[in-house]
Image (cartoon, rainbow over all chains, first blue to last red; front, side, top):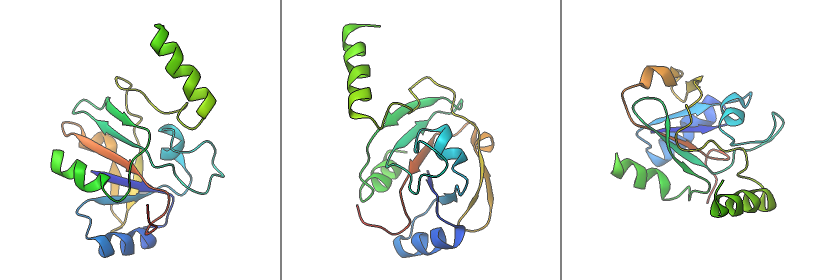
Length: 81
Length: 63
């Protein structure tokens, strides 16, 4: 499980501490990951969309989730891994 | 494209937002980024494991 946002590592560190997330939160300040995965339209977009993917063992997209609930999604997915 | 596929495509364009998402079966684009502990994470290093990639708008915002 990996979280991605356009925040700084420091902002993500406090987010991870607050919610005790047992996974990495990545910083994507130049929106490279966001653009590649369709989480934003352009580099100037301020926020990533609430989307998620399940990537299989061979590096292929197994599932694409267009809208996810930020409150429940991480725990649901961790439980399913 | 099947009729339901066409309908889904039209809906996506009409609603907007999801038109550029990747689809099941697509190769996941490789990336390299810094995590909240300062470690470098590369997708290719996770090959052999199932990965959930979760995008969120802003650290520590509700919803």
